[in-house]
Image 1 (cartoon, rainbow, N blue to C red):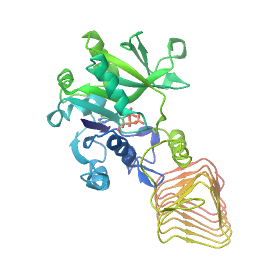
Image 2 (cartoon, helix red, strand yellow; image 1 turned 90 degrees about the vertical axis):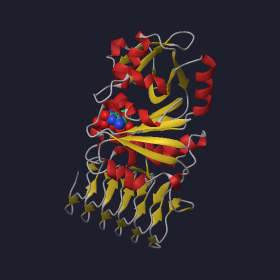
Image 3 (cartoon, helix red, strand yellow; image 1 turned 135 degrees about the vertical axis):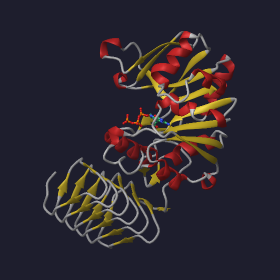
Image 4 (cartoon, protein in one colour; image 1 turned 180 degrees about the vertical axis):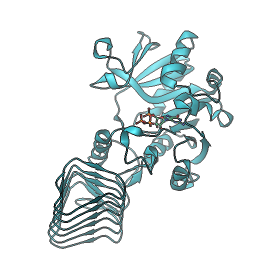
Amino acid sequence: MQAVILAGGFGTRLRPLTLNRPKPITPLCAIPFLRYQLALLRAHGVHDVILSVSHLPEAIRAVMGDGASEGVRLRYVVEREPLGTAGGFRNAAGLVDGRVVVLNGDILTDIDLSAMLRFHIARGARATICLTRVEDPTVYGVVELEEDGRVRRFLEKPSPNQVTTDTVNAGTYLLDAELLELIPSGTVYSMERQFFPDLLTRRVPFYGWVSDAYWLDIGTAQKYRQASRALLSREVRLPVTPPGTIGPAGWVGDRVVIAESAKLLPPVVIGEDCRIGERAHVGPFTVLGAGTSVGADAVVVETICWEGVSLSEGTHLIGSLLGQGCRIGEHAWLGPVVLGDGAVIPPYSRA
Ligand code: GTP
């Protein structure tokens, strides 16, 4: 079986982090996000993967390459302008046939794709959508099912009084490649708003399969933090581990220098070439990207730093999210802020 990963969106809700780095390769526990999805696919025997990209395609290609290091064959289809989720799938038409797994490139999940495939085959489905239960369905695509699992209705981001079920579109589909003919080429077309409703109108055998596996879309800063936490606490079962060696506090990369009086509170990921100064406290639930330096007496709790961040002496960060190369001046105290790449915060700031 082949897979298409939809990875062409602008990731506007995760700005400023996605201005220079598309959401599918934002690092989670110091690993480009797509690697988690490739691990899931590989675990279920899918080794032929097409990345449907548009926003900063070369950045994705530079990080993911041809997939050889991930044990998969990766190919790319590029839209000059984003054509929407269905348009992105349509763009892969020349490369796929038979049954195809389609994944949104921003969901962290360990769903049992093999079980979903068994369901798809047993029902004689031509399209199956994975559904997950969420507390607040109003920000998702709600999917109502018939008793036998056939999809009855789609409600994209319904108002609270329209919500009839807590099962929502989990951004994972099994589709017959022949259905690609239903998607017009070269125009913006939405999976959720156009393609799926069209399948219902045409009475295509279209089923919903409910999964209780871990599932989260990483589309906002709050969810991105939640995803990092879930990986650190091993709530998600995927065969990927952060770079470095596992120790009592978490994963510590090569060439890391930690002062003797510094404390690491588990779980943490400390990327390669990081330096942690005297009496600093790092963790719990903290990820330091490669080459990050933490000054003496700094406190870094539930914070995610991308690569090359500099935290000066006496900084306090709690719940912060810092893009690549941020520089935080001495004794600055930051809460749950999101700072874009290269932000410079003067000493003694409070935010
Ligand atoms: P927001 O702008 O924050 O909504 O993020 P997004 O652009 O990623 O949109 P959304 O979360 O709805 O997209 C779900 C998945 O589909 C993501 O993995 C996107 O990369 C992907 N996607 C969204 N739009 C397109 C598109 O036009 N083309 C392709 N190829 N993929 C898309």
